[in-house]
Length: 509
Image (cartoon, rainbow, N blue to C red; front, side):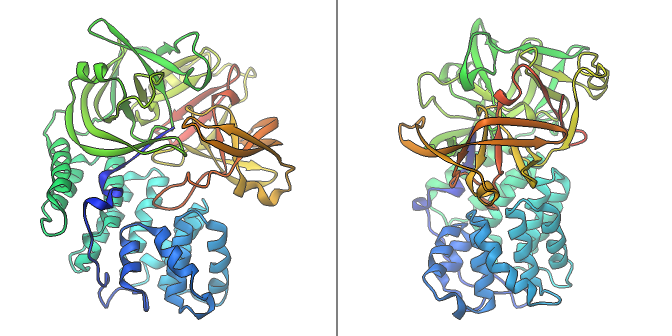
């Protein structure tokens, strides 16, 4: 599992932010909120807001303060606590006001109740008065629905020049913009975002602006087939690439990349949120990328952050297929046994990509080829289940445990099935304590319990499924995290897992 965020998300020692009020009179504002709390909020330091309010007597807070506290609780993934505080406010209003609707939408999004979140956010957005934070939340929600053009539309509605400069120049607006434009592959608009931010000489030091300028240059270069990023080229038939044999554990899903007589191992990981990561310096030099600015990268939910660099790779040639126009990250190997590179095949949107755990191969097909696949569609031999695909970075599918609905993340960089403790706490499972050493050498406690997880028409049972806190692994924009992680061992030898970007579905059969 790999995740990244741009330099603007961390490294606050590099620069400072001075924020006063952030909304005009026409926009819903918070009550007596101290400047530092507003600064934390717009800088996406939501834990700082929570820490401030938890020291106050909750009953003495005014409504606006309570709603800000509730929103930030949700965004640091304390979702049950946020909901508990929100419900009395909702029940006390026959017709909730705009600010309450916005907060409810954000809380329900953090809970993974996306339909309910959209219902409340629409009430806020369409209430006659523009609330840019609600539009920003709607943009993030549309990303989770994989409706990228709609996400861009909602995001850009937050950029009206009548809004305050503190809002328009905030970390929050910048970071969400980076996420939206990357997901929508609007790299020209992404470049402009970096250009504008790099021009703010009075706000940021030169070292930070230099990194922004490097990213501006990276994303602004005119290239042929500008919108065909992560596009594939192959022969007329389906592409079948066997996994590298003899590799065990979570690195078992690897394919080979050969360039100028040198062969490199590439891990296939749907938890890689950058799409393409290069760890081998030799491979990176051979690929001759266009280099951009610095970024911060993490590996796994408990990893240390590592410096990396945004790069553009014109082509990745896997011999029987090629991937063109790839934006990725170079970050040197944190350990010698790391793979040379890491590819998230779900970033490919012009083919249906399958992890075939029966043949132990990666398969790429067109829509027509996928429908005609005789190995897949033999009646009666294997049950097929189509489920909706949510998520723009991770792959979330609806699931159910003991009648409780939620989301499972399909993570080919994980191992087997793991459950989140918060999600199953109320379900009455009998938990047995265990401990384990993590990749970084620290010891972590977890639990095991018998459990059955359902995805679509399929059931996955374990006598001793692992249960983890996962208290630091959540979406930094929303606080959302899935109730379960499902790795390749759940499918090994039995299932083909396919990612259909045309219908936004995951197919298991």
